[in-house]
Length: 202
Image 1 (cartoon, rainbow, N blue to C red):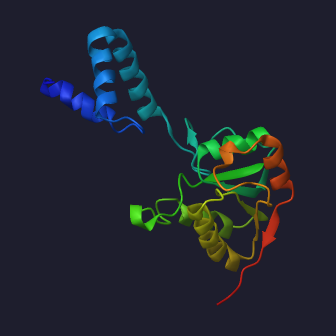
Image 2 (image 1 turned 90 degrees about the vertical axis):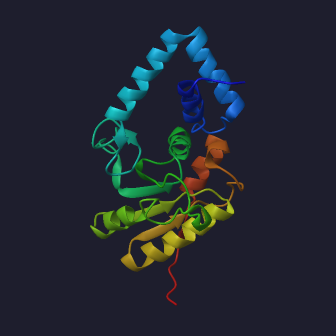
């Protein structure tokens, strides 16, 4: 099917969304242009407002509309503890478990050199600086139990070990996969029974 240049541009833009291929993007574009222009205008305004008003929390990298997100600015939390997770969904899963009342640091992914994702892209230097500045008693590594998640955790242990801050890993019981798929009870126990890891010099 032949589309106008602007329609083609919209179809191509929609394909930046995860799981949206060319056919799905075509259907979305035609729905917005032919049947729901009011919805398209609403989507445009919401997207522009979000792009202008949403940023990363300066402390944990979660999406926030202010310098610090609601969790990082909560004085009732234990700011001497940091739980490192891969995604905002992982943070939400841990919050729902009720097993952790400290701060978070969201990597927004895992190390993947083949995809060009290294420590800088994950904000790891920011995490290291935060621990080095003092006041952090423990860092809990809650990366996913996948090959990439384990490699990321190992790298973090190497970087955090020399700083003298306690580093721990979730206890056994969290199956291989994503934290968001683990039930709250199991996740809560894994946090409570977390094991401290030791740093070994070469």
